[in-house]
Length: 151
Length: 436
Image (cartoon, rainbow over all chains, first blue to last red):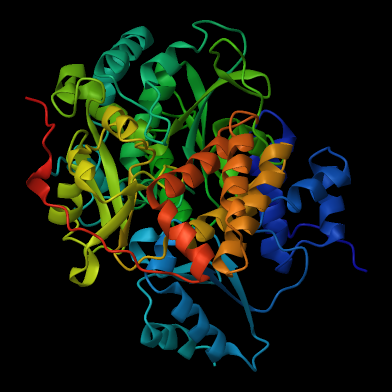
């Protein structure tokens, strides 16, 4: 197992943020984001590292990291597709879009597909994100376009 | 019906950049605002009747006046951009199209509450909108509008805090817990009204849209804001439409507009020429309204919504057409709540799972008649027994569906499948009880 440390750039970001809060514990979410941006997921080494930096017990970092759905504690596929399943998207044909996306991405281990709760894009339903980028008003041909560049 | 106060610069290309924003009046309210005393500003906001736009509708001026006038501790302004109520996507428009309006509002509000540090908590999924707002903040620092070198008489730092996917962090005390680096568990509420506390320091939490309304009010006066809306719900709000509607979108209107007119005239009516069956008027947590004669009398203000048995919430309406399977719709919402319950209080943590399972059984055709009573019983148990309003909202959602569409649930149980019920078209002119 390798030992986790922030890259120099992330360390600089961390130190800048440290000045902006009255207590280092506020850097919990920002640090978890930095760790995830570095490795693609948050390892237990990263959690221990963060705990030391923000002066809390490692279990506190674990408690928080497991509470928020956007943090990945395991490595995930390079292309993460999230499909909103909440009511406005559901009413606008999310079921068909999800099915289509799943069909298009079977036999490929490049993709992780998550059904997620409301992403705040209800006016552009149905919607998905690809590695965090919003794609709204989906149709099957639009999905082809989005995925086309990858396969 | 459209009134543009907060959304004034939404259609101007590149209004998110400082130059274009300034050409169109951004930061023009600052000089006159900062020449007033903080008390005077709180007075103007109180007189304007500005109500919080995040769902609760609490008077903003009253909230601000809870902040201590003098204290040896730092004060904080915290802006709530968590926006995770299904059907709601208005704050992101401000972050995207007019971030400088929000910065201006934050400077004035922070000055009124004697805060030199402001945080804005934005939901983690809004990466694009966070980046957009961050570049506006960077521009404002460079132009010495923000920061230690600010040329203004009131210095303010703004820090953007990115959430990480938890609906409950939109609850203001859960938001502060999250900002303090903890799980987003709502706090117990004090008996007497108090400010919030961020690491023990007084803080106020306001919604993005509320803060973005402040510059207009302070620049033009309370009466200018009060000329719109109703006596008890003055001003305007960013209302949203989604679901089965021809023109989904975010539209700023004065409070008190007719819901049906909003749907038909601005929203262009229900998709595919179908009839309207139901509306969830203000985000998923507000009880559903049935499209019947009474709906024609429902207005988009807090009081009218309350008397109709629902709530204005965040103003994000979800439109359902005549073919909508209401059991499936409720199941969809209950899955959301089941997933999002923070798990702190037992009635909510367990209850949200139970109600999800019961409605799931109805949907699967394996439920019995008595399950509906069990459903209502659990809903009742969830109401008023928890720390925050999450569980009472779930309770209200279930009761709303059963009050309006019980027959559909019963049919589902006896037939084991969706039985479409006839829907009457509602005439716009059919409201007989309009105020004379």
